[in-house]
Length: 345
Image 1 (cartoon, rainbow, N blue to C red):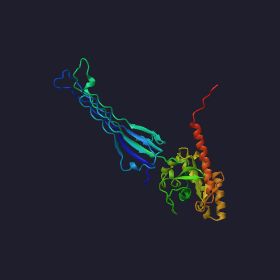
Image 2: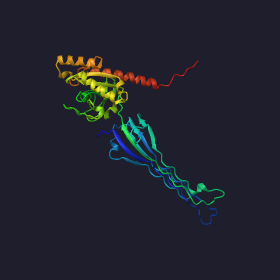
Image 3: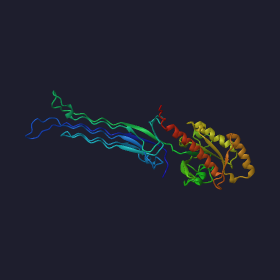
Image 4: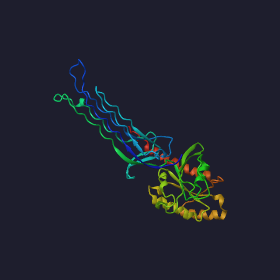
């Protein structure tokens, strides 16, 4: 399945049905009168968060969604039926934005959440509604209200516990493939990863979701390389695992390059908990490894981890460090969402 994380769609709720102008006329029955029924309400346009989806590809080939028009009223005081609703099913983490692409309408982060984007028009009153003591034979009815039309953006930000960041070819896809059942494309050239990937990582009896983000280069916030369009998926990650390859020219400069791009993107990415690791340590000699470790330690102002996704060295320690951060943040969220304890004398 192809990955699509942004889609522009046009929606329109259904028009309300028109009220009916009708009079009761039956042979041998006197005292007829107006009996036109009301029109039905038009269908709403609703967006709903569902499980089992991780892309907006359904909105690649269909961008127009319209609610059904309500049924018109009929004689014998028969009201029209309500028009069918249109339900847009989206994955967890989908944001709905107005046409300007900035005004947030809804942020759907839990399965089952739903919001009405456009309300269907009300049905018109039939002539029976207008009967009064002074107007016993009204000959007019209301048309249904017109539905609402608007253009909105759907923007997906994957929900993951941890995110992999780094320069292209830093070993992020290899790391994800080694610790989960995900099968990302792996090759010995930059920009192998062209779309984010997700994998479930198990450590003993615990697990967390890990996201692989396409590599960043200097100037990504200005559109160079793949740009920073995929960094939105990192916004929802609790912790970042920053991989710096030992086979690069200067590990410290590589680290600083990615940090500058995170700061330029904003959205508090630079303030997220970060675990720094030197990857591909099996591909360099001991002297080069020692030099790169020293460079990375000076740039990151902390002692980085050492790992190799190919040989497995240091992988257990890296996963343990990520899991510890994830569990701490989960505990903080649970404590923040818990209702306050009631006080009793």
